[in-house]
Image: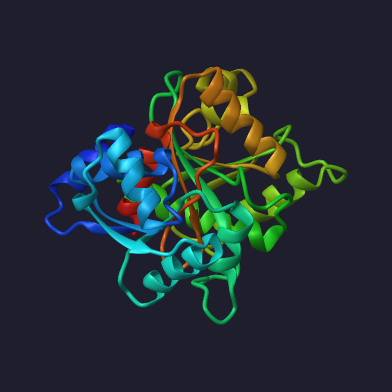
Length: 300
């Protein structure tokens, strides 16, 4: 099945006879439990909730969630709950990790722990899949949440993750735009210099699996008319599958502008660990958390 919308990811997962096992670190909040409950009910995943079992059952009773649809692991301490959830991933008892009520720093500390964590790559990065009403296909976007100012090696890792995600969505050879303020290579604008280097590395086969173009301004990457006006002729121009941003500020503003003003639907996850990890924001809707679970299960 070709994945053209976020909802298509759900349909692919429903067709899978073997469901991925999702474990939630410190699942003491109604938002996380609701998202997992919906995911389990829809046939997307199996659910494991690690947290205070009394509070979890109380939340289920108050909101009419069926506690028997989850495996509940009692651990009332938030740090130990995060560690227990990560241990289940490390031991092969679960396939996807999700942040519950535990703070982001404690969640990340459990993932990054040198002895008991689950980091498998040198770089952890945040990958988002967006369905924007104004664009003609899904966009894979990075990094909007983790790496403040990625260097060249980190950008290579980000490219690897967005390529893997786009391929899993059914794109045979993803078109990746390295976003900068301009298409010109300006020595004083470091992002344009690094974009040119990465594009040349791709051209020479050093970064395989995708068509990479840069430096490239956002309008040229997603608007064919703008590319034609600027006389930018590239298979990526106006038809990008993936956008790699020069820094967190640019990526995060793009992310929030599309969600708050552009009515974009999305799912997001961390990549670079042993399994995809859902890192939900307190401001994320239940729908976004559900889509993030689906995306992570698809990639797992």
